Image 1 (cartoon, rainbow, N blue to C red):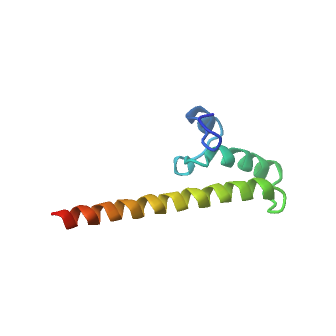
Image 2: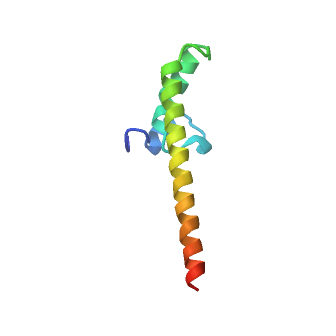
Length: 82
């Protein structure tokens, strides 16, 4: 595994995770999907895995927004210098 929340390409391929879902939280998605299949997608059965995955996605999104704001500020500062 590449990190605690990112699965390797082989793991993702073996788990048949679609390309659109291969992000920094992919290592948490694999056990969630396994649990969902084993429990027939009953929403109350895989709550712990689901909450861990959703928290990771939320943190990843907030980091993305922070990076985009910093990039926007840098572009604005570069325009002001010209």
